[in-house]
Image 1 (cartoon, rainbow, N blue to C red):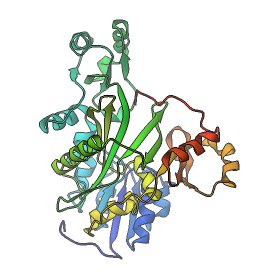
Image 2: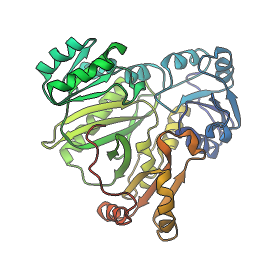
Image 3: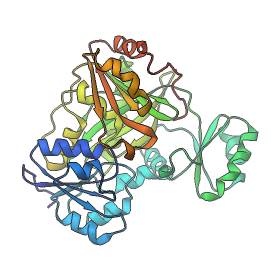
Length: 382
């Protein structure tokens, strides 16, 4: 079953609560595949788009098995799905992404150990299980630094930026919740993401590098087609390829990097799943990340990904909608993608905007000139 090539009419299964699901389902159906979606919510956009929806929890092993056995191949669309669920599904169907990369990416200590084995540059860090550990680690790592739980599922909860000794005491409120990592603060100038797709034969095909900007610690904007120092670009592509080759994983994944003023490159995180930074390729590249992901799963050949035009992706919030009405009737190079059920999306994110043209600076000026998104300093704590 693992070596089977899928053709139009075969069934792709999608699991995971993410806006990525409906876009993947739409792409799969355009390519001729049948889609079965598994979700705990019958109003899920992915379920509504699919040919068949199976409603159940991640604990319902009977329904999970039924879902798996109906599909020729299954993919998860979020790195938040429990790795043990993926392992269970693999007993009954082909799930090329596997669970190993997910296990590594969901645990900050495992992720750092994996990167250290490859001799890849990461921020200095220490393992923390008590408040005393924090005081000791700060003395060696220095200020500023940041403490985070090893489980990424907590998001930004239970994180604390430490810039002086009095900040350490604030960790007492949550330090007994489990194991943490304390890592040095990297004074980065740019955050660059490398998205790559890996097929079952181990071939890795990169997407053009993108740059990310954050506001209120959430992804706000991703750009492609800007200038990146050639040496930095080569280093990032080399590291991303090495990481992908050493992960037991098939499909699209994202590796985010911090770039310092001096050009030093640090790995920020690995996301073994479709990621919002890849939306920019809907207009910016000759192929979307959704199509490349499906091709890797069903054993279609992966062609090279080429930049078509500079593009900026802006995440849209519900508060932006009224002001966007003017741009809706004016801008010919603005392309909108709204999530079908905004109520299911965290932080009032309702979709994203793609602005394309011949020059990235001109596109950014066009966005800024509207005044919809008041200029802010990009978050340095993301």
